[in-house]
Amino acid sequence: MTKTTSTADQSSADQVSAGALIEKPRKPAAFLRLFGGGFIMGSADVVPGVSGGTMAFILGFYEQLIGSIRNFGRAAFWRPLLKFDLRAAFDAVNLPFLVTIFVGIMSAVVLLAPGIEWMLIHQPVIIWSFFFGLVAASIIVVAPRVKQWSWDRFLALALGTVFAFWLVGLVPVQTPDAWWFLILSGALAICAMILPGISGSFILVLLGKYQYVVSAVNTRDFTTLLLVGIGAVVGLVTFAQLLSWLFRRYHDLTVALLTGFMIGSLRKVWPWKEVTATMIDRHGEVVPLSEVNILPPLMINGAFNLEILYALLAALLGLAVVLLIEWVVQRAR
Image (cartoon, rainbow, N blue to C red; front, side, top):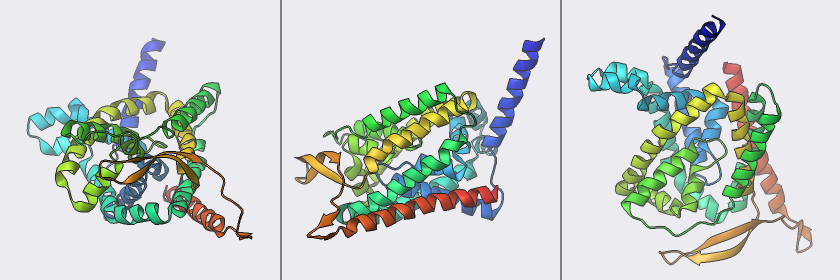
């Protein structure tokens, strides 16, 4: 009898959780907030080393996002769709919510990709310092969401840190531009993109496709973008099933692991690097093959290195942006 009651309670809890995940925006202000959240996600996703999933986590709609995407692979969506009951099918995946987030993400990618690409080339220390501050603040904000720390949570934190630290230190490879590899790249990148702490853009870097995709965005190469997008949709729907299950069953453990991913990713966004090897890509351009993090010199030509001051200010700005977002979200709640 006790076992039956426990099962019923668990089922009820799952239904409540699912309902919370599929909360639907009703008012224009809600759509505006979601568009802004998507824009912030897209801004982070453009840069290798920063995760849009981290921004969604801080903004408070990460689990709702995963829950909505998850339903694309479930009967709640496909059963009414096959009966041409589009309203019920769209309700199952909270389509207005997803479309608003997606429009915000794509707006940021299209508007900010040229500027961020310029900053990465001409002011790398400043832009990396800014994103170092973003990631560091994200760790501060996300870690307390583990309701109770225990040995298994700390182990998950350590494993996530080691894995991300290893991953971001891998060397990019030369890969084909074939249609099947573009689809595969999109699938792998989107799985990383929705994980806080692991950058989908950096996965594209490892696969040798980051510059290729950014160039496709800037030149409006819709064929390339379509192939990458197909892979992203397939990878997103399948991977969301696992993430949603982990959040429902092992919430604290999952959050601890994701926090570890963010800690490990700080290796990638450290502003000062020394290139140890280069290669010539298929376009004849010299690109870094491997880099090591270094400390900047305090003095240059007998004067204080002002780049350190600028980098510190950029990092503090990134820190302030995340903490301000968290404060606004908490006030709204």
